[in-house]
View 1: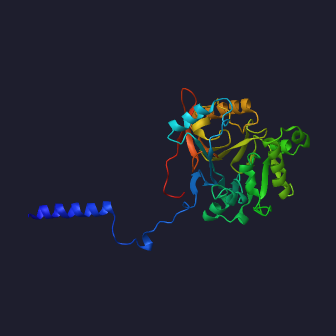
View 2: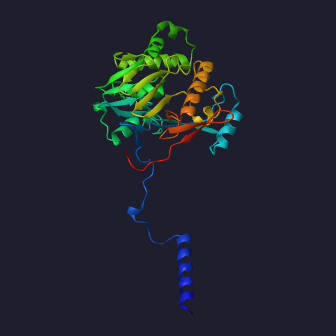
Length: 330
């Protein structure tokens, strides 16, 4: 037998062993922990401002029959399937931000709240744990800026005991949003069910803060480099933000769309959560036309983590182009 033949037989034997599995027991060091991903945060810069996207998790649910009000479930399922997703189910991510600007640490929106972590089996309510993993002490957060008052944006203002989660932070809220949700007449006229529940939840959260908030107006800086922009329709006071430093800018869209595979690519579709769907669509088209034309970086609360993307125009709408992962923290 030649040496080349021996090497071939040895290689074949090793390959067969690898395919069939070794008889030796696995060492403890080889075991891979199960049940959780690595902490979910991602950093990048907008000029001199450092941005940290911090995931609150993602909710997966059977695709609702009326998730899109003006398209049938089959069309929505087909759109998900075309994007290599499970057409029978819908996954919605949640991504609050931390920005470091003007010597201050600022949270933008707060996720579903720690109390939701146990209720969801750990699927959501991850924001505060990931915030700590990213090196932020919640007691050292200087300000929290809220885009609108849906529960996945405000519930994290409270801890599981119903006390302020950010004990030293000033809480900034859109004045138009505050005026609507704190209007007893608007609450009395709201339809029973989801809308009444939302009013009750808003009152619960802000009563837990003794209603100590600082309202802000649209078209003005809320904090250095962060300007509030009115983007109503999703809610009456729904707000987006332009974060700017030097020649760099970031459009923080909040909920101008829900998941982009549905509502960026089909901007005429109306999500069930929009209070004024026609206004929300008009806002979406206006905002996305400008972002696509100006090639502005976009941060989307319900975009796939880390939820930063550019937009390009298509024949029927817009296509999100997610930013490439940068392995070097900025």
